[in-house]
Image 1 (tube, one colour):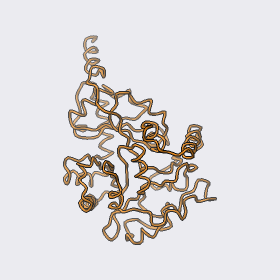
Image 2 (tube, helix red, strand yellow):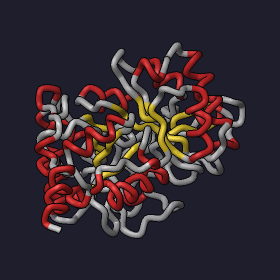
Image 3 (cartoon, helix red, strand yellow):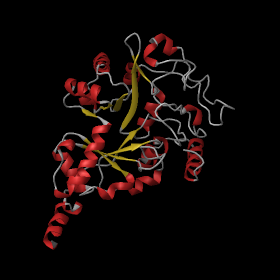
Image 4 (spheres, rainbow, N blue to C red):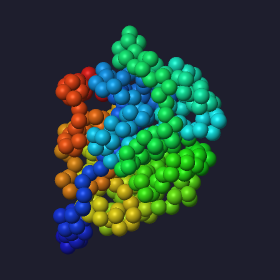
Length: 340
């Protein structure tokens, strides 16, 4: 028994594995967005009317948001896409327009012209509707995918989220990528979402990073159950493994051995935020970066790139004194539990 335990300890010894090359790579969820209280949030909950006190002027899924996140050091910017009634592709999170905009109904039932006429900052409020700080400032600001892709710097990378289960939206994405001359493999872009469009994207771009969150969760569960033996489950080979910040310790061989195993089989590793009731799926505080192993070189999903990217990459921090002070005040409120 003692010998078996010794063998397993050696098999999973992180310090005996090759040192990973490179640094953590941040994925900025929605680019820069207005944080909100996640208490009781469900799939259809409007989140624009529960935002925390704004500390930066950006809204999710806009060109300006994506560009600033990239400038602050985000390796990838996550965006959400939706097809329009007339075959265009826009960047927008919600299934319907009612929450964030002055429009109504499903995004996919509207034409591009109708969507371009909307104020996408119309519904945001931090005080129960007494004030609407972004109302009137974002008329016509819903970008098409082509507009956002063309605006990116040469090394700008996207993590493209399919909100729909329809595989046809993958065909539309491929069409728009071709229109802007963007090869997602060469550009380092990624795709994630429902199984249908992800399967189709893999057919169109076999070498691209494309993953299904449900499959990633299954990979994580299987690895925790079987990884102690040194075996990499089939569900993880060529797939994506998610490591919650507060459960790193349950993953055999973490971090170096696990990284080496996943790299051997062409897999990716993403550290996400801590698992728990009402907690977001990405990091929300700069100090959470200190919980990452020094050798970790995978991806880190972050909710507040405005402060976290600046902490990880201080040489890219171009925030003004006013922006820095507002950020610090927002972090103090978040730590005290007065706002996400």
